[in-house]
Length: 353
Image (tube, rainbow, N blue to C red; front, side, top):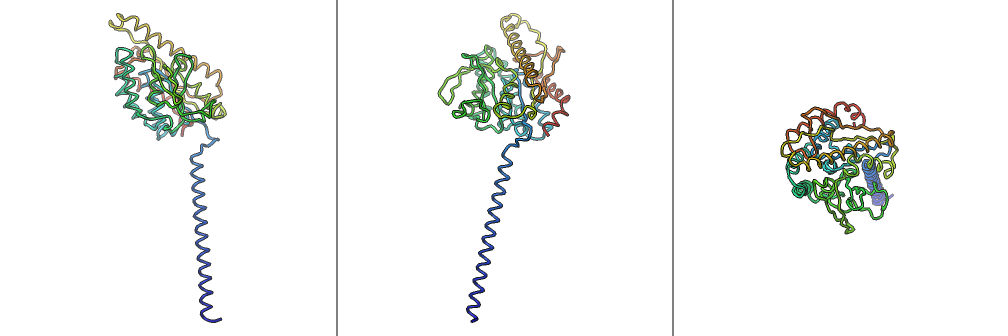
């Protein structure tokens, strides 16, 4: 064969081999991209065989410091932000503040700073309008323009409708909807700040809150504690009926605010006897609600694995109420919460780690 033809044949074979190598490299690259995509999708997709971890937080005003004490220990144990440890976080009133901040990715330490800064200011106000204005400032400064589309885990914020006397629960995911899926809007289009303020509006000690939904509806709301001071039943309803999880596959951690003696009234409080009776009546109403919800849970959902943390105290130094604004007493509540964690640590470690 002439030399130039030999060279041309060699060049053709080389070019063909090079094309084959390019094609092979492109194929391998494409396969690698597909594998990375599959791994990414698998990482983002929840494991349907894994337990559904649910956290519920009671209402109780300033007694939320107890809740934070419990959560501080849980967060330290798992070594990561709580939104990464729980698939659903429900909260009522003070629990709504904490639940929302957890769902937005805040650490317990940062939430504790918020409580130490704002709770004494809010609770020390003397009138309902003044408390409501301070609460609005807290919500605006802490949550800003955050919406329920911004949350990093499932959430439920419990409020009560004043006119229709029914619950209104703000959620972030359509997966939690029990109906009207086609028109679902995260949080009904209401900001987290407004929803939290509504959940904390313990009328008559706070003014009722009006929120505007994405549908243009103006809805008057009050503290969620009037319908579910312990929001656990609503959380279980989402887990079982909306998310369709088996009861045995749920791991529920329910954190209360503790039970305490009523503080002895001072002279000024005796003179304002009507106010004193109103505070005691509200506290009694919320506690009866909490105990009723707990009893129903034990009857209806006894097969849902649950850890309930909310200890009772009888010594005089533990006397407090939801309007507490003494930072020293709040610090004591925080300590008691941390101590309450200890007796449940082994069970929590098994579930969350």
